[in-house]
Image (tube, rainbow, N blue to C red; front, side, top):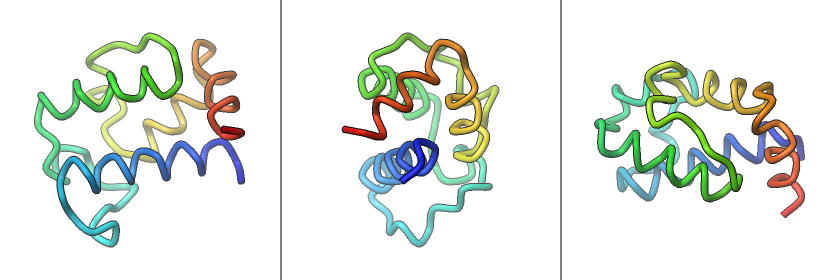
Length: 91
């Protein structure tokens, strides 16, 4: 499984738990805010991604990358996290 797929699934699972919704309601192209993620949820998600990837990210990350697809693409290409995403895919 590719690292982007692993990270995408991790984010979807996080959203399912945080929002208490079915996975079928999570669209990769939908803005986090449209899914129901507020500012507290956005900062919490970024913090949990930091823990998952063992790296530091900007707390405003979801405002710059407002969908799952955009966030995962950024994390895969970001020099500070690309190796960590790969590491996460083999966990």
